[in-house]
Amino acid sequence: MSNPLDLARRTGYPTLEGQLDVRVSSDPATAKLRGVYELLEDTDAEIAGTLAHLQRLEARRKDLLIDLNSIASFMLNLPAELICEIFLHCLPPLCTPPSPRDAPLLLAQVCRHWRSMALSLPALWTHICVPVALKAVGSRVEMPSAVLDLWLERAGPCLLSVSVVLETQAPPPETTQVWWPSNEAFRTLCHNCHRWRELEIVRRLEDFPLFLPKETHWNLPELAKLTLLLAYGGRHPSGYPPGVLSNLMNTPALREVHLMGFTPISLQLPWAQLTTAHVENLLPIEFLETLAHTTHLVDGTFSLWPTQMFHIPATAPAVRLLRLKSLRIIGELCTEIMTYLACPALARFALSFGPGNDLAPLTAFLARSPSIVDLDLDARAAVPLGGLLGVLDALPTTEALALGVHTGLLNTMLPHVLRSTPTLLPRLRRLVVRERVDRYNEPPVDAADVVDMLRTRWAAGLKSFCLVTTHVFHTIHPGFSILAREGMDLELKTHGSGPFLVVYFNSRRQY
Image (cartoon, rainbow, N blue to C red; front, side, top):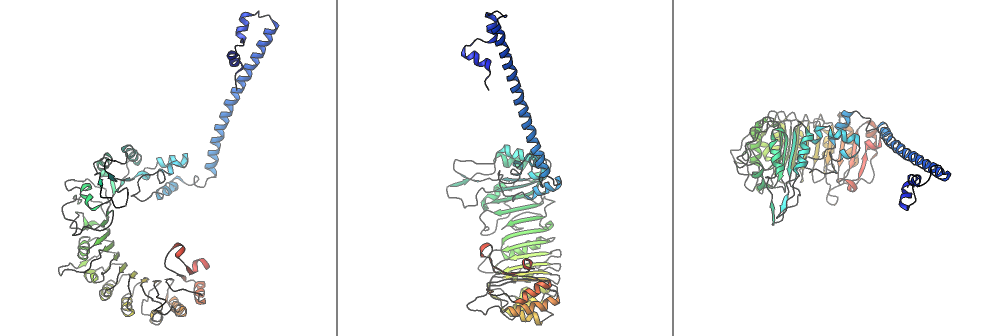
């Protein structure tokens, strides 16, 4: 609102002070005019006070709304420790570069309360991803050092999880050159290597000597997990040459590795102290050598590189792992390798293999592993029923069994054998069958036989059954509903997921 005094000055109208200077103060008109101006000034002062009071009320209302939301919000009423735990579960995978769309930056933008909690939680800022990207000629894109310094400051004294990844997973064009790790951000991280708890490098094969140069002596007293993966998969054609990468033997806390194509020959690690190992793309002899070096392994996952000829030298070591509890092997020709393994404490075993495998070495291995209680066999081929029954006969202690084949299973004599042979799998509690019935060349699944088998096994202790099949159930046998009402966990469904998944029967949804 305009001040009348300012308006009078702009229009040239004499102000009260000016009129008093030129007129006699006893003039009645002047006295009246002076009174009006005084009233206007009082009114303007009152308006200004009212506006200031209104601003104070609006600020108070805003604070009250914040308090109201704090009281009414379920999340804000949770204990601070629980909210912090939820925040930690919101963190993306380690290889995710910083982004305002991901935690922790996203959490700090929700509200004042969340921002305060996010900034006061050092563990939320311990995941540091440096996207050292493939650089086109003449361009440079890097993680700003200011961002990294802020991350390290917010992480406080906590141990760090560091990831160095490619900014893109697309294969590089021929005209692209790589900007090597001489940037300030990576040097800053290396200066803090004594705080590394986890290190992940996802790069091309030829990049690893630049990130782990042979002459570098690392100080990694807290490193517990190491991940070295090839950005585009694969492995070195003849095995990675030894003595090229850094010596990482001085890592007393290292217990877990995830490697691709690296073996004890090509990578100097304290293999004997590892308890968890996930190693991909190994040759059969490399697999045995790796197991021979990981004498304290408890949980192992290995994938064998597909080769035209499966060859194990006569000098291959026989491996005996006394502490191994869980083992998973994925390959094409891999049952023969079971001949060289002895795992007396093995409790969980998973094997995925292709066509052309002999089941006899697998059967002998299972017979030498009497403590297996959880077995998952996935045959990407047709398996003779006689050989499969021989495998099952070597599992007297197994409680959970998953069978996967590329032919039918429940349309064979298997249901009849399971129903009529109580000594076969006597402790079975959970059964999963993944089959692919050729509807044009194989007989259909007889639901009545399956129900009879399940009823017999239900009386013997079977609690759960899942069938994943290509067979089409036009109608559901009433025996499934009866078993479900009695307490058995039953599920009949197709392969696939999302719109390609058809669930014919699910006891959890219906009962």
